[in-house]
Every structure is written in structure tokens, then in C-alpha cells.
Length: 440
Image (cartoon, rainbow, N blue to C red):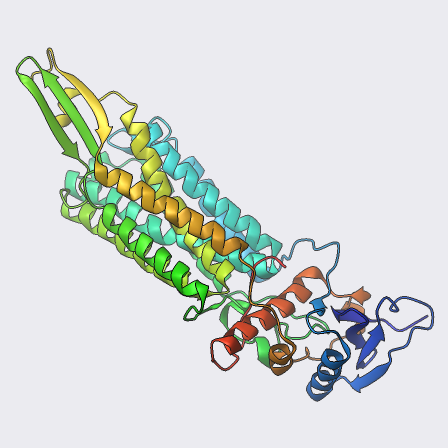
């Protein structure tokens, strides 16, 4: 019976991995064949790994080295991941229940499409967040940031709802508010908790959690970094569009044309600063949170993780525009505009120019978010990877996978090295616990 081998990286002619108590380089495709032996071996120590990697990068064709992968990733469920997804699940269930009882002023969210659609969108974003966290590895971090982006913006929106309770009295507050608040709190807590989870330790995969190179909160959540090259233009565009959208959130969006026998009159409504004090505070919280998240997302590296943070915020803000368009199609009573004499009065609903400006800026952000997701990460260079990769601590062989490490473990090691190559290109020293991209 041959020795068990875990291949971590593959090139055009050779494969780098770990054998029994040693690191080695095997001819490509030789692992698993009877009597296959490595062409060279090194001791299973940090120095041994560095020497093996140095030799491997010089034997191989530049640009041909890729992380090994497995065809059966599976779910990455452990106690910490389970806690984060449990909180998100509880929050989602509470949010779903909160759609049906009375919310404010005796009306449920489910009975008002203008309110139902945004809340369903929040729950959908948190559901996607939980699913990605369950997948583990780089997807776990993507899901965490998606949930954080949604939670940060919706904090202000829920604060605005509570502002109406403070202004008009507790009697307008129904059970739906309590369920929705519990749902938001649980989802926000689960998303934040997932940001501080570290990927499980890898048996033999370089740069995995549990080693000095990967120590740190979030297990490679990412970092703030100044953009370079063409990224500068896109970052500036995203930041300007985000700040513009935050500002455009404040003016009145709703426009009503009131026609009667005495003439016609245009009335606007929905200005963020024409409401009671706590409602204004909630609206300000939305604007500030959205602006900050857009700035952080534009400067976040890996860029794809920044896109997920931005996506969470854009989902929460985008459904506000959808809600406004739904309201345009509804009937507006004269009494809701403070018109006492309703006889012979007709009201036409519309939106203001500020609303369309807001929509255009959101479209820019959506396109930018897609661009950030599909743009390739900075290529891994042998020099960059050789300077940051460290082997995992020795583990028992009965806990390992024959022939190759799991997708999650190898992807994390490869993505971490990718992040360090970006850091080198920016002129920074390599830091611990960084990763690049979300799907490798």
C-alpha cells in the first residue's frame, strides 16, 4: 500500500504536496500510481515547506501553477458556523412571522405591497447570506459580508419605523414590529459573527487556518487597500455614485397632482427631513450607513468580497425604489394628503426628478457590483506566494483525505496567497489571514 499523499498545488509538469512526514514534488499525474515516488523530499517543517515551494516554482513554467481542487466540496459545518447560520435562520423565521400580524397602525406588512416587497427582499438577502456561510471557505466570507451590508442599511430603516412609534404612541405598534426587530437583530448578529469565523485547519494545505500565516479575525475576510491602475477609476465611480445615492435618498420622491374644480396643484411628499425627530434619525442612519459601506466596499480587497458587501447594501436601498414605484400604481385618497373636501377631486400619482436621479445612481452601483464580482483577482506570482505560504502544523494521518485536500481548504490557501500578491503589488508587507476572490 503506497503512502498517502495530499497534493496542494499543480503545475504543467509537477505537483507539490505532502507525503508521510515530509513535503515533496511528484511528476504530474503520478500520485495514486503504484510505486509513485516524489522526485525530491523535504522535512515536514516550515523551513521544509519554503524550500519545497522555492524548488517547485523554479521547476515549473511561470503562470502554470494552480491550487489543487476536489470534485466534492460539501458543506463546511462546525460549531462556529452553525451558531452563525442558526442566528440567521432564527432571524429569517422571525422576519417571516412578522409579515402577518399587525405592524403599524393596525396594518400588516403582508397586506401592503409597498411594505411587503422591501421586507421580503431583506429576508431573501439574509437567506442567501446563510446559504453561503454554510458552504464555508471563501463563500463563508462572501455570505458574511452580504449579510452585514444588508443589516447595516436596514438598521436605519427599522429605526425609522420605531420613530413613528415614538411620535404617535405605542398603541400603533403591533406584534409584527416585535417579530421584525427580533429578526433583524438575529440576522445582524449572525452576519457579524460569521465575519469572525476562521476556516477549519487544513491538514497539509499551506497557509490554512491554525498557522501563523493565517491567524487573524475572519480567517481571510479581507482588508482595506488603496486601488491602483484601472481600479482607481472604478473605485472613484463607485464612491461618487454611492454618496450621490445617499444624498438622493433624502429629497421627496412622491409627487401628487391634485385636480379639482378650482384648479390643479402639485404636492410632494416623502422628504427624509420633514418627519418626526426619530424618523429623521433613522433616515440619517440609512444615508450614513450606505455611504460608508459603499466607500469601504470600493476600497476592500479582495475586490469580489467588497462586491458582496456592496451588494447587501444595494439590495436594501434598491427595494426602496421598487416600493416607491409600487406606490405610484396605488390609489391615493384625498384624506391622506390632508384634503378635507374630496368631492370632485382626482389625484394622479408620480415621482419627482430626485427619484430618477436616485435610480440612475443605483443602476451605476449595480453594474459596478457585477464588474467587481467578475473581474479577475491579481495573478498569483511565485515570488509573492513563496514569501507568505507556511505549512499547517503536523496532524494525525487518520484525519486527512487521500490524494488531495478538500476544495475549501485548498481554495482558502490559494486565495490567501492571492491576497498577499495584491498586497505586494500595492507596496505593503504581506499580512496574515488575507484572501482574494470568493470562488476559485
